[in-house]
Length: 166
View (cartoon, one colour):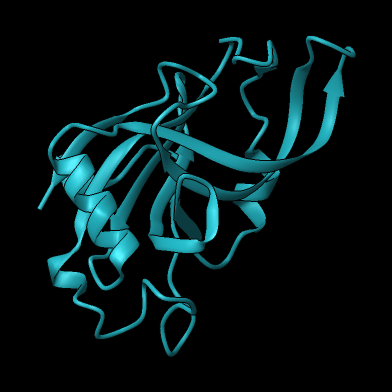
């Protein structure tokens, strides 16, 4: 990724001493063999399939307070952790992420192959609503980001992987 994968205003999250927990993301898991991806997990001002719209700044607090990397899941399945998000930040377009897909697990190898072949390129995220306006559709004002997932069908059709390396 150009420029070392840095985003203006983004934070690089460092794993705790001893590496990550879970199947993927541990030290010695072949991180050098990981697939690196970049894209948008959320777009601002664009209604999703549930008609909710995320406003700029919705992730500000969760990004400010987070000290460890967000997990990267395959199709939102927590038991299929395929890696981690190494850089995350809001820009004018939305929530931009750079992550690593580890090939250490069967799910990671499946995801990496599907991404590399262009078969799957959707991104999504798990969250908790902290503040919203309206009942339906909602304007999402503040969200707690829980995870990012590589998915077949994202809730926001334009939330996609835009670059792949490795």
